[in-house]
Image (cartoon, rainbow, N blue to C red):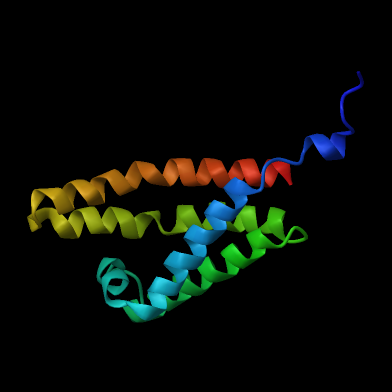
Amino acid sequence: MASPAPELQRLTSPAPVYRLAAMLLGVGTTHFLMPKPFDAIVPAELPGSARFYTYASGLAELATGAMLLTPRTRRFGAAAAVALFVSVFPANVNMVRLWKDKPLIMRLGAIVRLPLQIPMIVAALKIYRNN
């Protein structure tokens, strides 16, 4: 039996796309509903107010999640997700630095967040390659 046409081979289950989009839309919404925790991890070295970066990253997450949901913009949305995950990494590193005096479980949670960026980047790259 002949293999499917190349354009059909690129199609994969939409579940990973929807999971990543839901995560981005959920976290992006949280940036606006509860901004203080996000403000607290914005590196102080950045110019301007922490709230600006909280809202800007929340908006970027919402836009990226929306792009992933639309087949026409999915590939660009996946590339944007990779860029977003890389760009927020300094805030996650800053959280580890700022939380050095927090309870152990909180410090461990902040540390565990760092390598979790890798599977999110890999998931976005897979979506990019398959769409």
